[in-house]
Length: 579
Image (cartoon, rainbow, N blue to C red):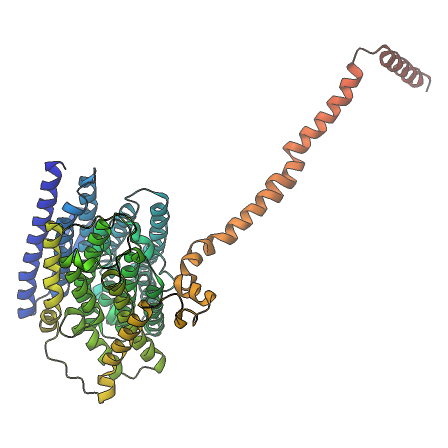
């Protein structure tokens, strides 16, 4: 590989890591002294025209920027090895840096215009990264991703138009005292819809697994702390406005269903990266639903802990896919823990953090969320959707571990397993450390006082029950052989419905375009190639052609015809003269 490319990787890693450390120290200072900085930078001032860039720095934006820059620096260092055979590594690094810059712009913006710039930047750069490998599958995935995100962009543009009523686009000023204004109700509704498209809630879920066509380091970045969390972060900022509204109750139902649907679909999927993507979708549903209950700090807490172990999970998947000669089907894997022990260690710890195993990162946020749910007075549907989805998380995690590490080695004839790459391992160990400690660290940072949630014994143990049931189910289903009874418990149609994400990918692609294309085809057949042809080009040509044949018969050098026509004309002439 070119030395310049390696130096670009190292420089990007170093700068982002430096930025992360700076954010960390600022964030600690801001939290201790309870500081919020609102900066206004006047870009241009001409007569009465003034263009001002606003930046909001508080503990939340600094903490989020710290996590984004940590993950992106580690991902770029990881890419140095993962993308080593890539000819255009410079272009890849520049795209990743643009992506991170767009996310940082979105995080620090209290202004709808700069939020749109970051929001649109994320959509555009994600399209460039999804189609990075330039084949038909990635083009389709890229179009689905960018068009789904376009809906959110349009809604943000509409929010900008509605905010013209207030004389400024700094939404942060109007959230509380304009709460009951009818304009703000519309704005809140549009912000929720925009966040649903970016964070892939039902019915916009199909783009998130499709975006797995991107290179694995991009997946690690996109699906942990940047693109998909932008919607959640926007709703955390708008929380004051939306907290008691009807729209949030609607969002609670939608996001709980998303969590449930993603959990079920992950258990039917065999593509390693898509399983992890559906797991991201499930966790996004969890964040959105706890946000809908009016607990923005809890959603933010889970967003940050989830970012760590999910990025690690994708990195481990990347190493495994590399070693399997770019094979992503888990049915062809198995027994890999003998050959790549460090990667399997990282994968198991990140999987356990995802399941909420005590004292890892995911436990602190998930356990608190589920206890707050049990503590609240929500109906039984939401309660069961939550706990079943938690069980399903353990279910697909155990299934993944069984297929990858415990079952027999299944790769047919290619035996390409070698010891791991040290660059990848070093980058993964950083996130492994964070996956273990970030939960307790953030617990001390975010919440000013310890939570004591008093519940009956069975409700307190409900999380443990659902985890054990999920673990048992994962073990039993992974050990199925061809004669197993539980293969026949689901009919084929039901399996197809659950496997294909409740037919959402079909509905959002062919479902949207089918009627328009069908109508266009009929229009073409009956109007363009039918009546309009008959009465215009083709019809006129036919008439002229028939007349031409008729005249051609006269003009043939035939004496009888000439004589007959001469006599005919003479008779006509005489007839006119006489009468």
